[in-house]
Length: 209
Image 1: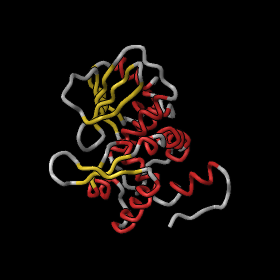
Image 2 (image 1 turned 135 degrees about the vertical axis):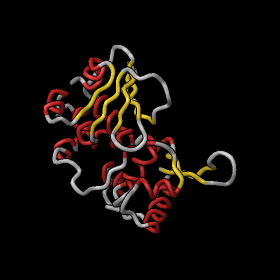
Image 3 (image 1 turned 90 degrees about the horizontal axis):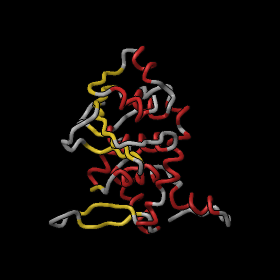
Image 4 (image 1 turned 60 degrees about the vertical axis):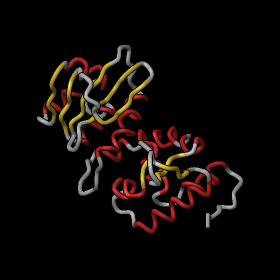
């Protein structure tokens, strides 16, 4: 049962829907891409399977999440409804707000490279204006990613084999620091924490570093 604050306030009513622990992280995963239950478990380290089932059921009842068939066969995947997808803007704002909390690095916290697909565009989109398209590879552990920059914004996806203007190899924390503008490329170079192949000027333009 959804708990009520008993307040006629947009924030209170929003929190009644997405304020429970794990709810916004489930939305984060589905903003990256629709996902099957097993994929959600992998992308949400620390969540119990029964709790995930409960949260998905609550979000579905509220109209934030929907189930649908995934391609051929009877496999079910979860996706955001159009109303649920409108949570992108407040979640991206929270990611930008979190910058001071991320400075200390990951420590022992879990990390999934796919989380950068939401975080990097959110951070760059608020402060960098791109005048010419560019594609930068990101090698941060795990499968290679690509950061596409264009006048319409930024997008991080798995590398699809296209030609890259440059490739950045660094730990995720440094990539996030560059994207947030908390670190310059010079800072990361001085730490010996980045390698760049290709056109470094493109990297500087994309990260405004």
